[in-house]
Image (cartoon, rainbow, N blue to C red; front, side, top):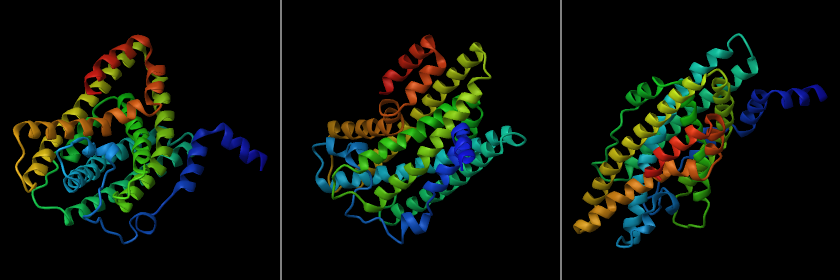
Length: 310
């Protein structure tokens, strides 16, 4: 028994395997449980959708706004889980003939990411059943994955760690008192976070492993890649915010003024930037780890680049 405890203490990958087994859930048995998304429920909490900040919308209109965003949330995570799973499988090759516990941890990680893809595909299908026609998700997942995976491993691991850490911020928003929030979507945020919190540990381990192999100039180039990836993420958010705001407005039962239309587009973009960029920077340890790795001058450069997005 003492040997087992010592092994767990000395090998963080083995701890990750143990944590993965403990957190493991099944899609139909634990999360979906035969439930549907009901039209009287919000999909995303107010703290993520920001629908409650638009004071000229009625409660039913705010609810529909959250449903549109919830559908895009499912699609965005279906997209990012695709490149994350591919990257983890790629990284696992480093451990083929080395630490088999590290290999097991990453194989389990990739298996769970594939499960998450299925979760969000199913949520998209459920959302589509209860919403009017005309919704479009514009980014193409395979094309996005190809662009991301062409960047350095350091930058992709940084982006992945950021994504998986902010699922905790999203779960915290969902447990604020709100009787109008979908119980099913709350469970999606909960169970997704349970496994992603374990993945973030592995992201950091692999990120630090890769970082230790870089020279200062290689690290600076990796920071360039990370900033390019954040810019690409923001480009996707801008594109989808326009599509979602237009879809939302097209299905209101009244016309909005020009100033109200402008506010709707701005609020969708502000919400998306918070959901997929700001929440990970403001409410997790991501920045702490990032700045520890890059040093002061690169940290200043990153802060300057991120400021307009926050």
